[in-house]
Length: 191
Length: 109
Picture 1 (cartoon, rainbow over the protein chains, first blue to last red):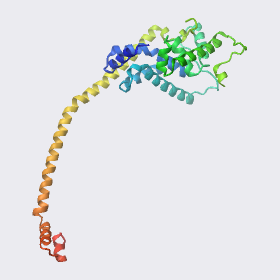
Picture 2 (tube, helix red, strand yellow):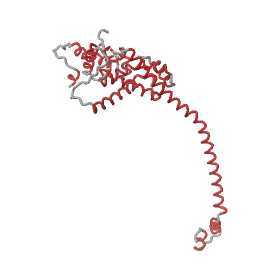
Picture 3 (spheres, rainbow over the protein chains, first blue to last red):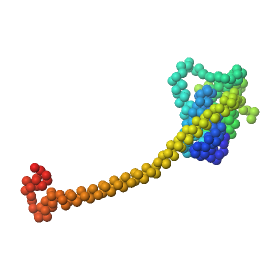
Picture 4 (cartoon, rainbow over the protein chains, first blue to last red):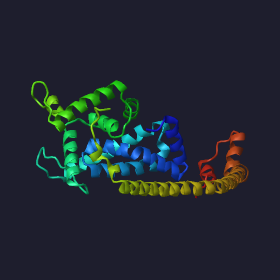
């Protein structure tokens, strides 16, 4: 992630219409935005669309960004809102059997698609907060400090969520068993 | 580090060409939109000053005309208006006018 002052500088330059600043912001934050969107909607294709739309929306209302040094947190809020809107419209549109998971696989070789399906399926067993943290940390390589700032949580929370998310994912992905022999998902624990 | 989950299968950057194209398209759209917005603001700023000057001039003319008209109306009503003169005359002389005079003075037929 970009340092605060650099982020603020890029936002100010983008407000003046500098193309290079836009490019830097997109390069720095488009994939993190995708991760946040994916955490909510669970479909990579939808997540990409949401991330791009959210970026355009953010650029349109760049003048309302009150803390340019915290651009990521502001952008993520737009991403979450868009993602939730899509979920709402999807719930109305899709007629899927209850509990069925709808996954998309496009333009990927079968072995990758298989891995992708496994990852998406495993992620579906986490709550959104843990998905956000684990994706920002393990896909984006963000530090806990950066994650905590962008998600408005403490670093301790970030560490805890990552730890729990990895545990659940590992059980799901590797078929590991917990000590009592029960491979439970978070939803099962919560329920 | 070894604890990391490998999410590379979900990484949209895996397809580098497509990712680069996506970034370029997004930046182009955003920059075009921003320039359009800035252009509108600049147009408004460019017009704002003369429009304000004209508005100020019009309001001055309007205020002056209103002031002069009001003065003239005041003079007519107090000096040239016979009804006002009659009423003032009766009041000064402590006279009580006949109802018909009063009616006639105030414009009745």
